[in-house]
Image (cartoon, rainbow, N blue to C red; front, side):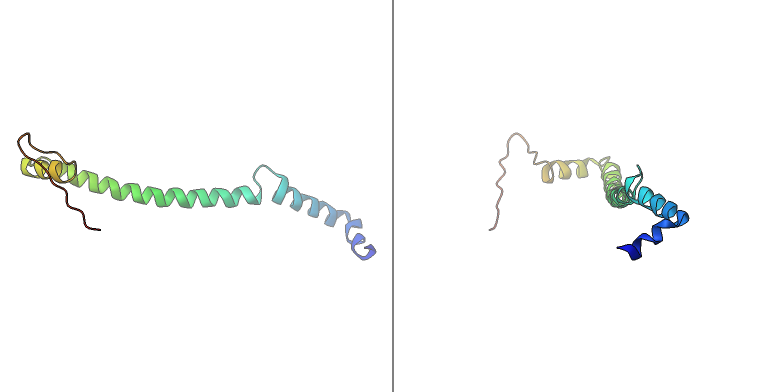
Length: 94
């Protein structure tokens, strides 16, 4: 124990160690906050790329909807719309 105490008798080493402990663990922007913020940033960047891909797909669908035959196909296949005089049978395989 005494061999470690002589290190802290030096005022410079004591000041630097207090400064490091405060900045790494006790400050508002400590090391744990920085790590969590970096994780959130990477998650947001991946979400942003997914949203950009969905936006491209949506823009493509919107450009195709101008054609009435594509609009009917989209309504029947994606939204399960039907005409008044027809019945729809959905067949699923297990």
